[in-house]
Image 1 (tube, one colour):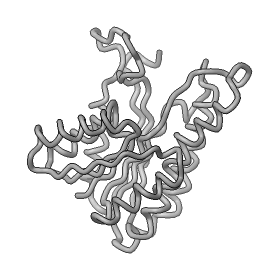
Image 2 (tube, one colour):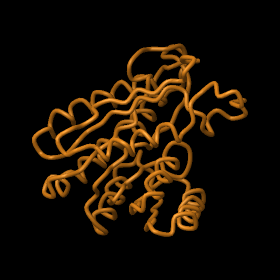
Image 3 (cartoon, helix red, strand yellow):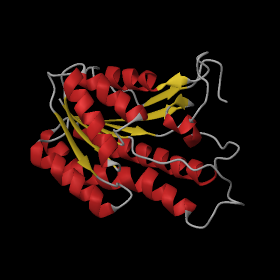
Length: 232
């Protein structure tokens, strides 16, 4: 299958890429940082020789970049799986956030997925099959301390996911919302996870991969993954 993954250079995106590469699927990756992205792509090529790994630098908070990445993917082949993972996190509250934080969160966490998906969909619908995964968050489901604009953007992402699922039911395209709780990635800095307090990126990847193996008449609409001991 042809797998499109945004925000693929590290964290959850990289783990998803590794899971699909291990099974020989072809990858179309993007991220903002070209150096980190190329390092990830080369690592995948070395570890999983049976798959093709193509990578393109793109800042998906910019619609022009997003369209360019979508068109590049389509110039290679029609995607079978699209994983809208690109996003950023800035903690804060509505009362104390700097001007522009909300706009930045919406551009990165919502518009990136919206514009990429809209650009890819005509070809996917024509093909009649496909699966779109939208990486939301447990912050999409309830407010929490310090969530601020990040949580607002993720609530919006959940709305996008719900509407997309409704629109594509009869077009052969599956839609799955993924709602991770705390996951140990670079954003946690020096957090000590030696006792397994929070989930790891591979926990998300294995669930997404499993969903792509379901029969054509079934779809997992939502995946919620939290640390076993609960949210922090």
